[in-house]
Length: 200
Length: 100
Image (tube, rainbow over all chains, first blue to last red; front, side, top):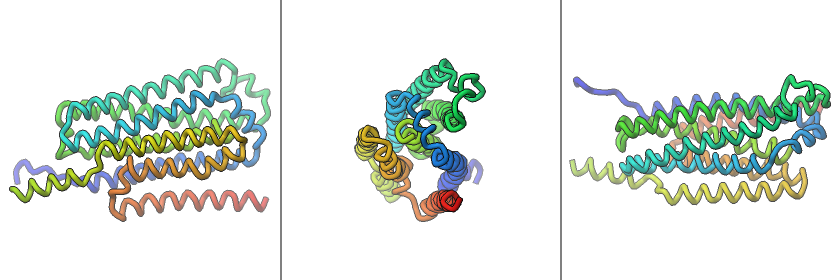
C-alpha cells in the first residue's frame, strides 16, 4: 500500500458544485435586488441603461462565450492526451479573460469620466433610481470582474500544471473543476448583459 | 490488462469531441445575436428575450460545457434544488411586491 494516493474525483467534483451553488445564491441575491429596484424605478433604469455601451457589452459577451469554449476544448484535449493543444486552449482562455477585463476597464473609465459612479458629485444630482442603477451596475459587474480575475489566475495555474504533467489524461479533475468555475462566471455574464445593457 | 485498456478506451470514446462543443458555441453566439436583435424592437421585446433566450443560453452552458448532460442524478439534483430555491425567492419577492 506504500505510495497509494487516495483519489475521489466524483467527490471533488461534487464539492466544486456545492461551492458553485453558493456562488449562484450570492449572485441570485443581487439579481433579486436588481429585479425589485427595476420594478420600483423602471424609467430611471431605462435612462441608466441608455448610458451603457451596448456594443462593448455584446463584444464582451462574445469574448466570454468563446473563452468558455476554449476551456472546455482544453478538457477534450487532455482527455485525448494532446498536451500541447490543451495548453494552447488554456492560454487562449487566459488571454480572452484579460481581454474581457480590459474592455470592462474602458467601460468603467468612461463612466468615471462622466461622474457616473457611486459617491460622485454628478451622480448625486440624478434621481434616486439612477443612483440605484449605477450602484447595482458597479456592484454586480465589479463582483463579476473579480471572479473573472480569480478565474484567470486559476486557469494560468492549471496551464502550468498541464505543462508539468501534474494534470494529464488519467488525472484531470483539477482542470474540470477550474473549467466549471469559469463556465459559471460565463453564465453570470449571460444574465448581466440583458439586465443592464438590453432590457434596462 | 487488455480488459483495462479496453475499458479506458471506451471511457475516452464516451467523452464528447471538439465538434459537439463548437456547435454549442455557435448556437450560443446565434442566440446572443437574436437577443440583441429582439432588443431593437423595444423594451418589452428585450424583456421577453431576457426571460426566454437568456435561461436557454445558460442552460446550454450548464448542460454541455459544464457537462451536466453526462452527470448522474445527484449533481443534477443539487443544481435543480439550488435553482428551484432561487425561483421560490423570486416568486416570494414578486408576490410581496404585488400586494403592496
